[in-house]
Amino acid sequence: MYDVIVVGASPAGIMATWKASLSGARVLLLDRKTRLGVDHQPADTTFTGMFKRTGLNIRDEYLVHRVRGMHIVSPAGFRFAINSPGFVVDRQAFDLYYLGLAHDSGAEIKAGALVVGLENSLGKRRVIVRELGEKKIYDGKIIVGADGIESYIAKWAGIRPMVHPNEIASSVQAEMIGVENEYPDYFQYFLGSQVAPGWKATVSPKGDSKASVGAFVRNAPRPAIYYFDNFVYKNGKEKFRDAKILKMQAGGDPVATIPNQTVGDGVMVVGGAAGQAGLSYGMLCGIFCGEVAAESIEADDQSKPFLSKYQQRWRKELLTEYRLGYYMLKAIEKMRDEDLDSIVKSLQDTDVSERIPRHQSLFGKGMSGALLVMQKDPRILNLVTRILPV
Amino acid sequence: MPKGECMSAELKIAVDSMKCIPCGVCVLICPKDALMINERGVEQIKGCNGCELCVKYCPLVAIEVKKE
Image (cartoon, rainbow over all chains, first blue to last red; front, side):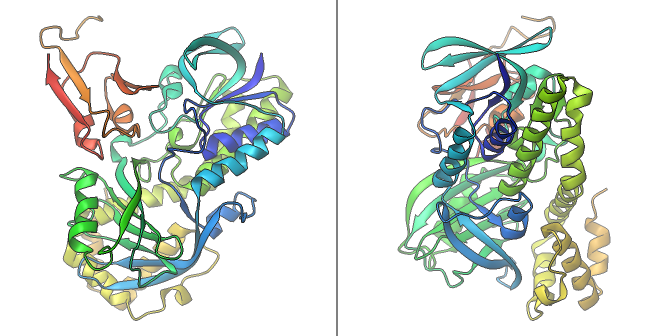
């Protein structure tokens, strides 16, 4: 009998495992992949300010490249910079580093273990697992579903973890080498209905001529791979002329799905499974989840009301930002390419970062940026009233 | 099969295993919970209602819905 069984060795799952185990709980971490750390989802960039909120330090073991901030690029090519330091990680090294910490804290880790069922009986939960072809059964007091956006732990537990699952962004991302990048110190976000309807195409420098290049689309008329191909082979002829793809990835990014219900009796969901978008934010939620799991074991209470402490903690810390993110993306979705051009153009000669408080979160920065735009170009007020989501 | 589900037109969700990662978007978006990821990739585990949301959301064009 385990205290906590975590399903899915995502960064959020690993954090939950590590934190619960550090506090003395007996934790088992299961992952369906036979090789941990590989074939992960594409998230490999984050902002330093966001990451610091986890209380963790950035480690050389996985750090690939640092950037000074981001460039927002409009459809016609106007751009402005927001200086907010960020970094790119080697996700395999990243996952393995934190798995190492989880292991050292005493957690048991099993790879190649596919959970095929969840059962509930008085005071304990049971997961049915196919482990390298064999059927195994593990009992636990708490099950943590960190099994990605497709979470079956949530489905089996009757939890609806996302407010707007249909707002999921489909993405195709590739690690490329030989990229001619004029701005090696910035993440670049390209907006526009032709480039990436509903969200963005990205170039994230990884040092030398390497970069992660991706297309992230929402409610788009065509699949993400179409916009990726367009971005790399048509629009980006110069930048990608000599570039080669080292690795292709695809996925769903819950950037605008807004996390909803994340607990049930003896069950918590975390990370992508809970619609908690973003590498750093997923990890922070994983930390909250692991802490509450440990408290629940200590108090010998695995009821939904007790585990709701986890829900309260992440909501207090992050829900406003997730909501703002949703509204921002709904607004971008309604903007015409000309609108995006005029907004970005009005900002391009301003040092936006000077005018935006440093301590703010990314979305806070976005809101300050929006206010700044309105000061500079009052016509944009009309636009804002038109695109505000209802 | 539960009451109310349509038996007449059996729809098969065909996943191209050469293209599929599997990323899980189709599993999330399926209103019937008809798809699941196992050791071999995405597999159909229940009847499909033919809404084709999985086809629309798949980033890599790896899914087709076919009439059996």
